[in-house]
Structure formats: C-alpha cells, structure tokens
Image (cartoon, rainbow, N blue to C red; front, side):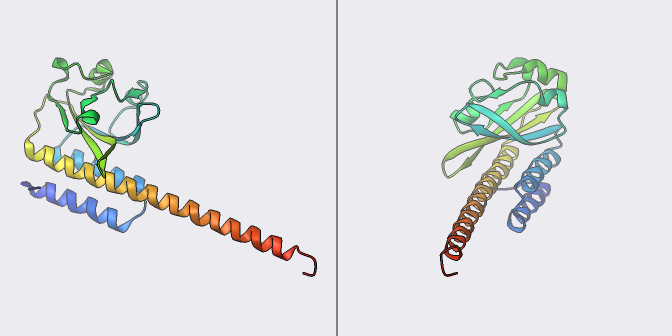
Length: 193
C-alpha cells in the first residue's frame, strides 16, 4: 500500500502504536474511527460488527453521530450496503440521492449525510464487520483514500481478533483457577485434614 499523504501515514502510525501498546479494544477502535474522520476531513464514522446469526450490523463505536441516527432501528446486513460484506470490497456512495443501497436513506438525510464509504473489516479471510464513514457533502473518494481506509479497517480486524483472543484466554485462565480452587477445597475437606 502506498500512502501519498503525510497525514495518512501519521494516522496509520498512531493506530499501529495504539494496537501494540494497549489491550483496550474500545480505545483502539475509537482511535481508528477518529483518525479516519480526521485524515479525510469527514463528518462522522462508525465501526459495526456483523452478527451473522441475526444478520445484523451491531455498532461498537461511533463518532459525531446523533442519538436519533443511532436509534433509527436495526441495521440488517442484507439491506444496508450489502456489497461491502458479500463482495468484500469497499462500497462508495458519492451521493445518497442517487443510490438505493441504504436501508435508512431518510435517517441519513436528516443526519446531514450526503456521501458514504463502507469498508469491510476482514480478518483471516472472514468478514467480521464494516468501517463506515459519512460526509456532509457529496464526495467521490480517491483510490488512495480507499486504500488508506482499507488499511485502517484491516488494523481494526487485527485489533478485534486480538481482543477476542485475550478475552478467551482470560476466561480459560479463570476457569482453570476455579477448578484448582475447587480441587484444593475438596482436598482440604477430606477426613484427616
């Protein structure tokens, strides 16, 4: 990937440092969204995970979106820009007025959203969510901007996977400690102790 803009590179470095220096998933995902918005001078952004059992996109972080927009209703993966998930490619809507891929176009208009970029978050060949970026003006996104956002989305995929792995390790460790404690309690309750 070539980064043509120095601010793209700085944003990418910030996110990379955060990933390597913290285990706080929320902190890193917030930083990804903030840097994406700042680097492209956009209105807002969000990251949603794909709940495949319910076929819904569940927002886990957002920036600069109103409560009304957030409460618009459930976002179904097959009704809201589904190509980002199925084709595994970025989906660009330079002008929402001329596009039929949105599940809630009226909520977008009310929010002042005119253009949208949806990047799939992929980890180990599995789509796990989307990075969505919103602009208040009609806008075409350049190839370099899309490459940069794809790289940030990939960082998000790594971060999410690392957090899930750490969470599983903690649960496994706690289960082992509980088993050890139970064994010790059973041993100390034997006759003669």
